[in-house]
Amino acid sequence: MWQTILVGDSGVGKTSLLVQFDQGKFIPGSFSATVGIGFTNKVVTVDNVKVKLQIWDTAGQERFRSVTHAYYRDAQALLLLYDITNKSSFDNIRAWLTEIHEYAQQDVVIMLLGNKADMASERVIRRDEGEKLAREHSVPFMETSAKTGVNVELAFTAVAKELKHRAVQHPNEPKFQIHEYIESQKEKSSCCSYF
Ligand SMILES: Nc1nc2c(ncn2[C@@H]2O[C@H](COP(=O)(O)OP(=O)(O)OP(=O)(O)O)[C@@H](O)[C@H]2O)c(=O)[nH]1
Image (cartoon, rainbow, N blue to C red; front, side):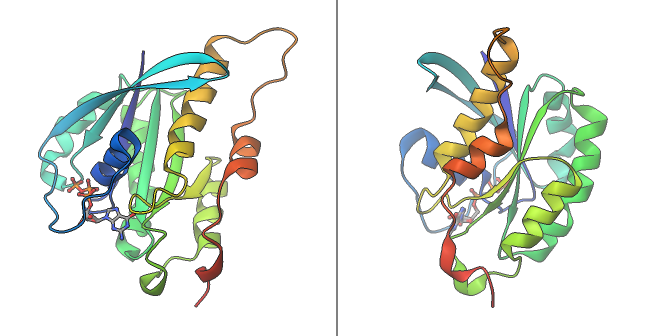
């Protein structure tokens, strides 16, 4: 079983992303911030092998930070989210990465996600800004929508594939390239990246 952890500012959509992945639904309406931390177990099939992910949903609020740090150490993968309609959530990504490097394992798989891609008219962070930040930190990136489900499954399965390939590397098999996999699979929420 692999542990994956969702992190990012409060309100970026961590809980919503996990609910969409787990139950295939989006519950709109009032926002209730996560208190502390909780987890969901989910089995995903990669290359015909069942892989169990335990996904931890952390509270983005500052006051829970010391609680959530304790969980970084046990995580094999980490999904780091910002909200494409919220500049400060994007600006804080650097600080999140600093914390991750301080508390998580060195070889943790990190994926950067620009969430709320459905909210085109309120977008303030262009997709290429997300791509640039991801490149600077050598992490894979995609935009997601917990509302429409765009790329949600892919975010988790790409991580599961990477973990599986790390665990069982067959000598004659080429190394799994997570960046290439994502590029070939992701749906670009095409139209509205520029304003
Ligand atoms: N339109 C849209 N709204 C979203 C999306 N993801 C989350 N939301 C909304 O954004 C608000 C915050 O979502 P949450 O999933 O609770 O955010 P969180 O990151 O878990 O917040 P904390 O628990 O405080 O860390 C809610 O009102 C959600 O309905 C999305 O992809 N699209």
